[in-house]
Image (cartoon, rainbow, N blue to C red; front, side, top):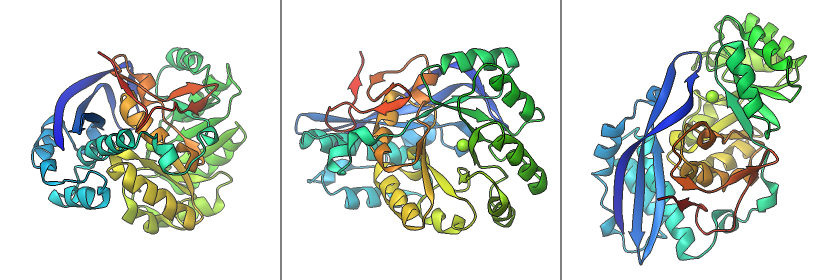
Length: 338
Ligand code: MG
């Protein structure tokens, strides 16, 4: 197997603001693994807050030698070897995991939802994310979200109620809320959640700063809406720490090193009776379609990262009537655009 990779920059349609930062572009690295005349595609997306960059990903990938593996099907061996090269570098690791999964699907000529034994019609509805913005831009974005059945809103600001009221002035669709660690006092967070419940909000993601397990457990215990961990859960080993703290977890391929670990995380979370959401970064249709293959396993999906960019270089899974639509192409179901 031969690994190739090159850096690129995704341009966002709108400046994207959450409670802690704002950005217009996202650096990515695209990977290709070639074997037996087939090419598997992968991607690392590196939002600033996770600490990876073009340089760190390229440097990590330069340490991987796939030529020593004769059998690409030995995913467990190959991916655990790569995981041990260095700690962190989760997006870099995911770019190899995704490309390998794509390659294997092509070698057996099956999409991953088939290999995993999933019904492609059981995909969840997916939400469309609206960042923190002025009322005018928020209304414009709600208009762009026309096709979606759930609107995801970033809160954790001084004017959270105003943002929700702005959306409610033009749409009655269910809303999911991501506070991105923005609420600092648990009693006020609880008051806010009661207010949001009356506004047809479905659940709250990462209400408080990470590592505040006692306070979030207090909140979840009293909350009329489910709570989901995002920043508090990165990999498989983090799930056990949030059992009894959150109602569910948000799994992202870029946080957890890819498809293989994501499947393990979904299995563990379900065994612990926790809900599961599949999320994403700003990504091309490559990484989005990879995550979409697993989506029949989860309660909610927030896989809209490819729709927030101007320069996608793949086509893959689509959104039809607000629901994820999986094509029947092998691997992760993507085509590279010229
Ligand atoms: Mg989040």
